[in-house]
Amino acid sequence: MSSAPATAPKSISKSQFVDSTPLLADPAALQARAAEDGYLFFKQRLPKDEVLAMRAEMLAIIEKHGWRQPGQDALGGLIDYDAINRLTEEEMHRTDVGVTADAYHDVQKLERFHRLPHHPRLLEIYQKLFGREVLVHPRHIARLVTPHTCMVPTPPHQDFPYIQGTSQTWTCWFPVGDCPKPLGGLMLLRASHTQGYLPVQPARGAGGFAVPLCPTETEWLETEYEAGDVLTFPAHTVHKAARCQFKNQVRLSMDVRYQPMDEVVDNSSLNPHCTLKWDEIYANWQSDDLKYYWRKFPLKMSAWDDGYLKPRQRIC
Image 1 (cartoon, rainbow, N blue to C red):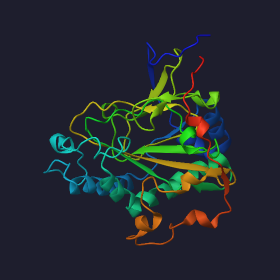
Image 2 (cartoon, one colour):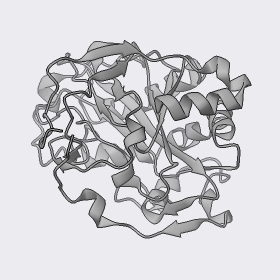
Image 3 (tube, rainbow, N blue to C red):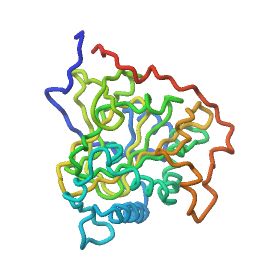
């Protein structure tokens, strides 16, 4: 066994995701594939019109802040490179979301942004995967990956150190619009979840830490995402973002998390993914049904463990 992992494998194999839509009719087979592969992919799972409606609202915020090229329709994602790069790295607030704090707060206030994760076609996946009642984490994350020079691709990592609670929490990632490979979609290492928690090292990009890769970890899966596609994986699956090859486009996506209702959850998963309070987020909503919805459940809370984000060497 080697004593130090390689920072990047010499040879990388890229394969396509397998569509698990047919297995929704056979929960046992769905659960077996999830246990073996450490991910599930569903082609055109969300209604395309609802995803594109979300896209139009997010792009309207980018336009409001002056970073969108003029002359596009409501779904066009061309970015004014000079305008976005007039912002300093400090003004960009947090490079894991791709825009300033004010713009990100505008996204977090969108009612559709918080309603879409509760879509029945998403809930069905987790009801059949868990075989029990599902908790939708209210802490949703938007990525508006602009061509600002401070942006770097999200490094290889597991979600568990940032979420904690139960390791049975699953991340649901989907592009808000088409996301061809050159735009920088999500990639993951098949079956990497079987290793459990892996140690981390500091790294640039979202989260600030990365799982150092071993030389044998080369089987990255990816796809040409279309609006409506859904990728989901458990908290120990290693994944990363591909580098965007464009300097004039934005990549929009959402991260949503689901877990069995009767498993433990960390309190941070019940807070907004920003400095706003829930009352500020809810201020202009038209409906009340999703406001503080998790408070009606008898949730079991777990304590946060700082140890998961303490740098350690990995032995391959």
